[in-house]
Image (cartoon, rainbow, N blue to C red; front, side, top):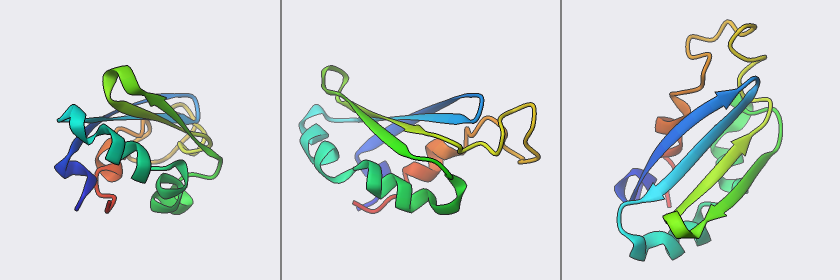
Length: 99
């Protein structure tokens, strides 16, 4: 099952840090999300796109998880030559993870 089948995501940036939140459609799926979508899974999925640590924060009241990806935006908006300097595509990329 792909993550997108049970959750949606949002992303943002600050400098070279990408922030991705993942929220389940059905609150009953939150325990499954919290168990399977670890920082290590996200780090492995993003591979060389993220050069720093990935930290996960749980948001149980909103049935979601927040991932902070450090050194993920190749210097940030004013320095990177990437097509997507804000990392907005990261929210789609995370949803391609197999659970």
